[in-house]
Length: 169
Image (cartoon, rainbow, N blue to C red; front, side, top):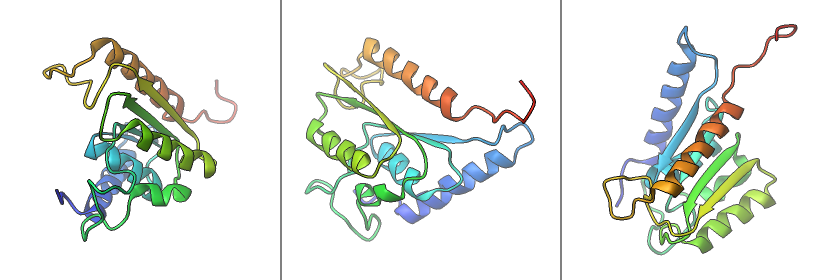
């Protein structure tokens, strides 16, 4: 239940993004995506990692403070508490049948993003629960997953496109 400490994960994500940006074949833009606890880390990264340009949270549990996932020495803050520090656009993908996060928790996250004036898109899917992208699980929902992946790729195309130099088209 403890997992990797948040500070270590954030350091790893930041180092990875900086390494990608330094590559000669980089356009200078890097995004992250996470699923379940990785979605929580994507949200946290959107608030703490300056080297990223866009983040995608796929059904990230424990973004909000809850009895199921309490704060501890590895996770000293609920990511929602850092929403005002969010530095980049965020895409959220959620199943309306999920219980971690519940639809009510997704509502709470969306309210925090609106209140803080952050750029975000949320897409919620009826008939889909936790991990609905996973084709090897009973909860797989191919139609919803196909639509959601299209939203992910469109979001990245919009926010990770190379900047156009002045006078160049």
